[in-house]
Amino acid sequence: GLAEACWVSGSANQLQQVLVNLIQNAFDAVETVPHPQLELTLSQDTDQAVFTLADNGTGIAAADLAKIFDPFFTTKPVGKGTGLGLSISYSIVEKHGGQLTAGNRTEGGAYFSLRLPRLKNW
Image (cartoon, rainbow, N blue to C red; front, top):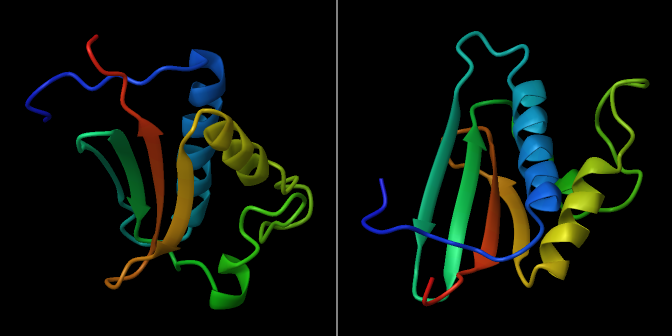
């Protein structure tokens, strides 16, 4: 756990929407994996809180990584996703002064990292 409380400022509903979307996508990514695993970590530095969600799915294809946050882009089967979840999540995080990034883990699977400015002097 963290040595001290870590607070951010913003819309609880919007940030919850981002977290739910990231977790749902991670569950979808490990749906066919024999031993599915999700790893959630929370850390902080002087200015930011960092939430990272990693999975042991198939990862994100290199060609898809550049488009992953584009509106209507999806790798899910027809009827399974709208291609708006990550795009909306990206916008919400930016409006909160943060960053949302994605990549592949060297050991396999993908990760999403959500960085938000820490609320100081809480």
